[in-house]
Amino acid sequence: MGDRGGAGGSRRRRTGSRPSIQGGSRPAAAEEEVRDVGAGGDAPVRDTDKDGDVDVGSGHWDLRCHRLQDSLFSSDSGFSNYRGILNWCVVIPSPTCVCRYGILVDPIQVVSLFLKDPYSWPALCLVIVANIFAVAAFQVEKRLAVGALTEQAGLLLHGVNLATILCFPAAVAFLLESITPVGSVLALMVYTILFLKLFSYRDVNLWCRERRAGAKAKAGKKANGGAAQRTVSYPDNLTYRDLYYFLFAPTLCYELNFPRSPRIRKRFLLRRLLEMLFLTQLQVGLIQQWMVPAIQNSMKPFKPSGWGRVGAGGAVLVPNHLIWLIFFYWLFHSCLNAVAELMQFGDREFYRDWWNSESITYFWQNWNIPVHKWCLRHFYKPMLRRGSSKWAARTGVFLASAFFHEYLVSIPLRMFRLWAFTGMMAQIPLAWIVGRFFRGNYGNAAVWLSLIIGQPVAVLMYVHDYYVLNREAPTAGT
Image (cartoon, rainbow, N blue to C red):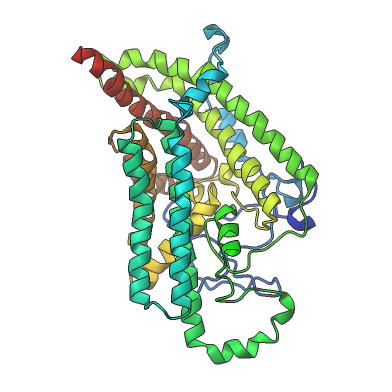
């Protein structure tokens, strides 16, 4: 957390105060600040309507959505507002004694979660096969750029390709017995990320073609002024080098000219790699030493009554929440910053100050910036342009998020209980309740409580159903 030197060696400072929150009535994607950085690095002031939402009528082509900036936990960000952590200390329950279970950490068991047979790697094979779909999308775009395909044909081919990206790994994970649930989750996550990236890739190239067709004369006037910037223009971006840089970059939103840092800072990268190694071991240890015994003890109340599963969640609250917090830092700060440093990717805003959230809406807008930015750019704003109401666009964003949450859980477990889907859709009324009745520290405490209580309940629902389906059912059959 105490790293010197921001992305690209810049010395920009963030203010310690966060934007004011107007309750939970705003959409999960509407308050995103879209920074359309010009060639000279200046961000124009965005147009907003009277409700504070982004005015989608003034900027049809969101060709740029990244800028050079640091992550909040990096010292050069200048961010120092962690007052939400004080509320967390108040609402978090006291942890139980971990040592009563003895030493349960076993690294060998971790390997069995990924592989059933050391000579069979189905999840890895699935990930390698994903390259076929990326190349297919690239070839479609190349032909669209030279006019070999019509836009309607290109749309059809992209639609088939994107649908196959979701259906093919799901069928393999569901039908192939040699793949483990953990391996399935990792493979499906890779395909989900590929789906979102190729969706953005298709959209941005389409916008470039529309812009080229509608403003050829204007583009010619600007050509000489932009020559010194060494920027890439359409269709020169259609190369495998550009495609795979985007596929590996820590973002879901494509653009032709990503902000780049001037060099790789070896000391910064080494810190991130050491954090990744340490926090990975810590998470595995906490899961084996604390989480698994707590869940096993919680199985007993499940059997006599279905309502007992809710009461049994108390033992899982603290370990689940602490592991989630560690996972957040590990993924969004350590891993994504390490990848960004290796690729000299300049936009390090992977999260904002969600710990200060005074509404459920603000939390969902700020804890996962890559996904939130994609939803705003490729889902929420296009729905508004097509005439949908803000409420319909907000609901659509949550529906899409709920689908992918359930997709990543039910298929690897080979059971469909819709707990993740229901939990995500429940965020809509919960956001209204918190925004309507809670303000300030009370709102922040309500957000923390929803995180501490909601996730363990969903985890226990799936664990119980999986236990009954895979343990008790075979026993009853014999």
